[in-house]
Image (tube, rainbow, N blue to C red; front, side):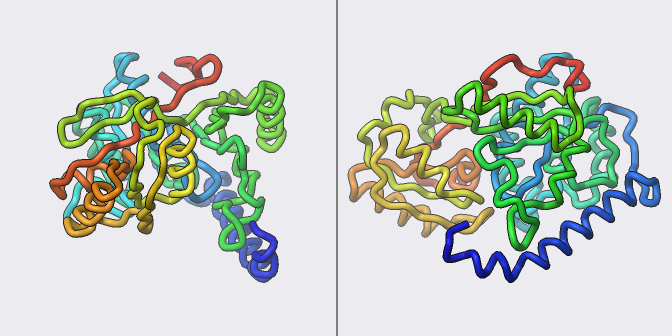
Amino acid sequence: MAASDQPLRAALWPFGLAYGAAMAVRNWAFDAGLRRSHRLPVPVVSVGNLTVGGTGKTPTVQWLCARARAAGKRPGVLARGYGRAPGAELNDEGAMLQAALPWLLQEQDPDRVAAGARLLARGADFVVLDDGLQHRRLHRDLDLVCLDARMPFGNGLCLPAGDLREFRSGLRRAGLVLLTRAEGLDAAAIAARAQKVRDLAGQEHLPVHATSHGPVAVRSEPDGTAVPLATLRGQPVVLLSAIARPGSFRATVEGLGARVVQELRHRDHHRFTAAEAAAAVALAERAGGWLLTTEKDAPKLRGCGVPFRVLRIALTFLGAEPSDAELRL
């Protein structure tokens, strides 16, 4: 938080403390059995985080589902469906997963207990609970927690004063932690962060794996052809996005050598209109460049009938991947 924001943070601190305390009491009620968790008769793995904003959960869910299928499972994803358009079956993240994994079973419903039963009826035998760390009604066999390696806990305060959804003690529920966006950190820095996570979790042997959440290719739409990342070097681009952290998208694109001539930012989960898409393409054409967007935004743009490019992102482990036993496979 910038120095100019310090007075606001100080004013909101009591509200953040109250929010964190309320979440702690809620978690205690589940831990003590005063509130019921419903169990499914198949393994359930939650992928979640402690903070608001992007920490690479969706690429992690995609990797985990592909890993489960390779192990002979039929995975299904449960999600709340936040930001889903009226009448749509899937929100932006769900559509992105479906495009990457056409065979994937998905159910989106605020009642994830009922949605879980529907997934099982469709044949799922391994359930991934997307954004599920704070969702305690559904029992999980493993809480996989994603933490941004550079700022694992934001400013250390709970909402609305900071980025935390609950106190850092929530890490005690973690069975596996991924330090995402760890590229560029040396081995000593990664080891120090991993040890801090274990200390906060109170688990000396908690598995902590470092990952890179980075670009792997550029895909042209609507034909779907892929081109190397090197084609972005010196390329003029207009960025169009509706994500939680658009600044991270721009930094990634500029890091690949592209020349950002204009950036069009919308609120997270914004639904692009045909007029907005056409105007963005016109800007790119006037600059002699490309309209470039994120994988999360691509499904919404496809319905607008305009040409654009997509920056493809993938999860890469900087060391050994978690074992099947760690993942409950």
